Image (tube, rainbow, N blue to C red):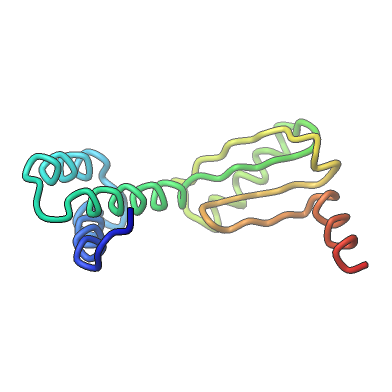
Length: 130
């Protein structure tokens, strides 16, 4: 379902209103979504779906996923987490995953930012150039 321009504009306004001091207030966002669902204004489904997408993107900005081919030691994990906190702020959460398909190296994703220093990505780039 494609949202109308008015629905997108309303969802963005809801998003701005659900931020307090630059941080997302999930309780406030939830109460606004309930009010919209209850009032059912024109295009409310488009408003709610766009608002949900904006909320998901905002939450993902503060969550990082670090993939490695082998389990990382506690010193390495803490060093990576500290670097991410320095770059993205102290509220960034970290999630470490083991992905043997990477062969070696790391892949770090924070929101829409991705750093892929894995051996698999390098081999894939090399095969694309050939």
